[in-house]
Length: 293
Length: 323
Image 1 (spheres, rainbow over the protein chains, first blue to last red):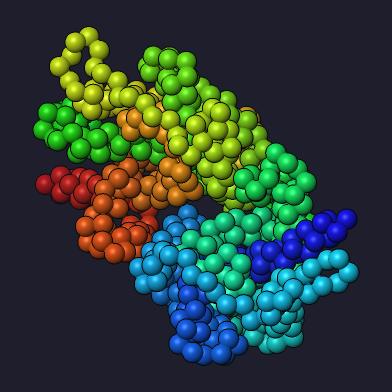
Image 2 (cartoon, chains in turn yellow, green):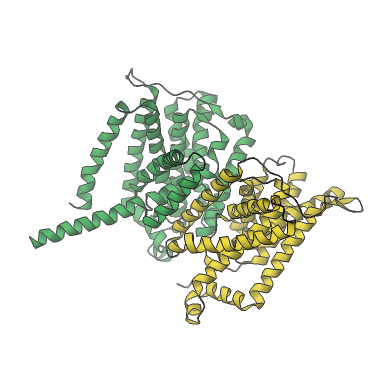
């Protein structure tokens, strides 16, 4: 029983990280109808920036805040400079541009920081927290907490601020929003900025666990896809919950189903994606897209 | 000159040039061109699915791997002559692709891209897991086949001609398939599924069949690649391979048969050029190429060529009428 609870808790922790990256994916998808394949690499690059800042001697939380600011501006600039020229192009063209972005960021990170793994500090104490016979990694709990805080902030932002409302309007009906005086193009850019910011949080939370290297996000990205699919690509809260479910399922299956072990863990993500897509394509909390013909 | 007339002139010339290449190039360069043809077959397969039928696949590397491993295992374990392994690989991929196409029926656009992307990501792990068959991460080493009938060709030259032959057969088949009734049904499903259904097209059957045919093409390409490289290993079939295929068809030109060749040239040679330009960050250069290419030719190379040729034809037609 203890092992079970232990596995569930650490599953929730990794799930929180999947959830935050899934959240970033869902945000860009909602705002722009684009799935950003470069999301993972953007997060990885932000994490390297954080590493640079921390090594330059800044306290962790200062570096954290600075990284978020840089990531936001970076995402904004990428949308304006790279994505905007192909805004009206067919969806596959945008996908290819995102892939171009992915290889550029990956290669630049490898060039600047080398491909050697680097340790990344955690802001939370190393000593595990003990309740009864169960140990909770302080970082795990902290990462989960940070993810929930981010989700709460986004909820408040989209629900109660004018800018958030404008962004939702721009995504839902660009033409009418334009007529109401909303600068639709800029709303897309802000959406990318916010997604980069959320991605940066995910990167900084996951780096202490998997170590920092240019390819650290590729595995996590697929779990994020699985999470977003499970929760529904149109539901931010669903994406986080999907992440938690995927994290827990991944851990439990890895522990209790012996033929899967750690070797076929990615295949579990594949299975989750396929099953959800076949049984309920819109995900647990997503809206079913209705077309008028 | 009209488009069809031009094609009648260019295609034989290109084939003749391709037949001369083995006697002009070094073995290494020749191997690169063999690889171009192999990619072209795979890209044509993906293009039938994505370009003509409108189903996005980010997982065709999986079928490429399936084809390659079918050939490798048949030769290595059962000593089957290599010529027989190619149709078997194609047929196996046809069946698997058809079966994968059935759940894919429920998915559109982004969701299909995701499902296939997951397939591509999982493939190396699955290959490593069935170690007994696949040799695990060590892979399987093959030997290159010699030219039969006492032909005075070295193995690289022989493989080049085999690949060229398979390429030509498959391209003619695809051109026939796509220009007839079936092809029109495939394109109609992409453009307006509801209208296609109303016209009596069995959408579900055609979409799964297209998936199967597309997978078969890619599987044959994979089988040829196993022969050409004489080695298969799980990490060669990572997700990047599938992404490269998608890059190839979009750069080459969606829904265009000749686009497969242009795309194959791009994915084979541009990474090398990028390497020449910058040893430190070749993929950054590649990514920049990719993005600039998309800005300059959003319809791919074949699409831009068609545009230019169309303008030329109109211009010459105009002058004739004026004269």
